Image (cartoon, rainbow, N blue to C red):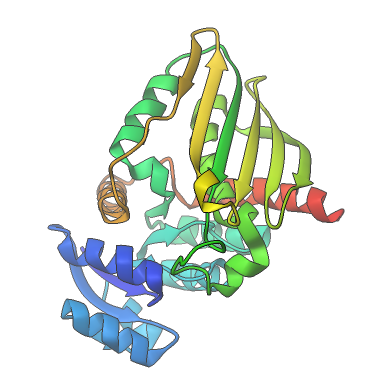
Length: 293
């Protein structure tokens, strides 16, 4: 499969480009970016072509990986789908529900495969744990804490304008939901949403299974307090998400494998654009509660 990369930022450089160039079943064709000089630098690093015209790249590939802010990703994803390119997308799918819906519509109309890269869902340890828990019933409640240090450390993402604008709810909220939904089922209602320190957000969710869950999300945690915890409680007792040793390149390689499989078989992946849209809808509902809209 011939694949191109849209985006040249830190995530594209540290995860996407290495994963695409090192994948045995992908032909990494080239890079397009909003900054031509950055596109050329990243393309040169991996021995591929830098494209100044995104449509020229879309015309020469079977798929694209997108590593761009959500407000930029969504229209480009729809454009790529209409050009009959399969999509390896980042989370969140879009900066709003309507934009996300436009991506899903383009995917469905063009009959292309799509995978949204929720990092934890493509880590081998997490995938095995989720499958084990999803096969059990009787879950009563869960808590997920995604406490990052993007704005309290020397993170390469600290200069990200969209993260400063949208905060933890939109950046790490999708990670939490991507782990809770396969086990507890879809969210029936955002029962409560409250702000904590800085960009920290607390959510209470009711799921269609009858279970409830809480999420605590932050990009401004003190470094000593940072980390990820997911705990489930139910008839079988309590279980905690085990730590994963997979880095972003390994996880993204597995996401690329999933895209290849979906494109070959025509079967949607559980983390397809439609799932990405559902996550966006839940995040938007929580944001509406926080802002009073």
